[in-house]
Amino acid sequence: MTITAVPDAFVFMKVGKHAGEDFDTILQRKNLEFERTGRIFWGYGGRTCHPTRHVQPFARVTAEASGNVFFLMELIDSHADPDIVPATEYSADGVHWMPIPDGIRVTGSRYALVLDEIKPGDLEICPAELEVAVGPSRGRPASDYLRGRVDKACLKMAQARKSPSNRETRRVDFCSHLLDPYAVLLR
Image (cartoon, rainbow, N blue to C red; front, side, top):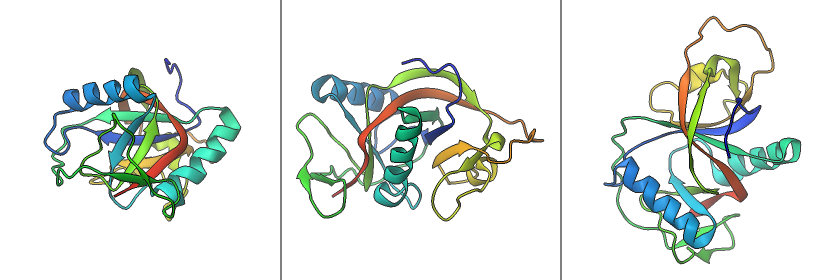
């Protein structure tokens, strides 16, 4: 999977050190998960990108329109150091819970994106050309939304395609595809 152009819609996340592991260690562990199980649970938390209210509806519409739901990652110097408690169960709907599959380990996270293999990226995005696709900030320019501590978003090309005055770009260091059910809750 090589992405040669910015997709019309995708999930974006700033990534880095997490729960006592540096990013290279996390990436190695996650790609081993893919080899063992055919999928990766990419853990995350926070108030944005709730699995059932944001990611799943966005991913279904995106998959229907384009066939793929891309996950683009920007590597940052992260200081995230949550509890290292591993999740033991996951749910796609918050009602029916199943054990985390053998070979998958998710720590310090309330949610997880469900991914295929993670590959290096070689792409830049211009947040001023993008907008938040779902949730209470829907329609907000990504260049405004992704400031400060906001580290993830479901994004799409802006409705009003005008030439942005802010041409600041963000490098996509890694990429993947989301797999059905796209995102899950953890406990």
